[in-house]
Image 1: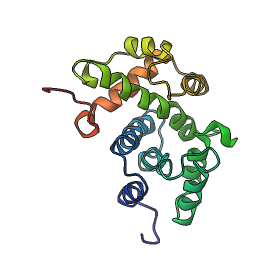
Image 2 (image 1 turned 180 degrees about the horizontal axis):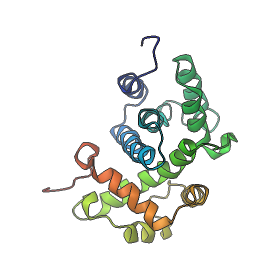
Image 3 (image 1 turned 30 degrees about the horizontal axis):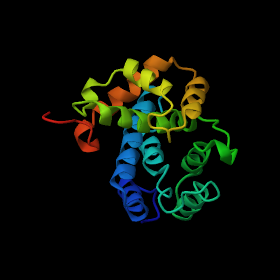
Length: 193
C-alpha cells in the first residue's frame, strides 16, 4: 500500500487475507453494496462508506471472540492508515465496544450489517434462492421466528432501525434493492435466472 488513502483493492486484499470463508466474504461484499447505497441516500463519501462495509468483519473469522473482534481488526486498520472515521464506525457496529455511533456512516453500518446477513438467509430458503423474489413482508415474518437464522441478533436490527430513525419496511426494502443490484456477484440470483 502506498502513502495515499487505502483503496478498495487494498481493502479486498486485507479481507481475503483474513477471511477464507466464501459466506463471510459474500457478507462483506453485501454490506459493502448496502453501504454504497446508504452513502448515496445520506450524501456520504461512497468510497469511504463502501470500505467500511467491506472491512467491518474482516477480522471475525480469525478473531471471533468478544474480546478480540473488532478490536484486533481495528488495530490492523489503524496500522495500515485507514481513517479514524472508518475505524470508529467499525468499532461502533459491535454494541459491546461502547463506541458511540455518532455519524451517519456509523449508524448506517449498524443498520445494514445484521439485516444484510438476515436477508441472505431469507433468500437461501426461498425455492428459487433468488433475492429478486424476496419481499419485506417475508423478511419481517422470518424475523419473528427466533429459530430461523438464530445467530442473527434481532435486537441489533430493531435498535439500528430506531437509531437511524427510518421505517422498518422501507429500510428492509432499501437493503433488498441494494443487494438486488449485485445479485449475481453476491450469489443471490438464484436457480435458473
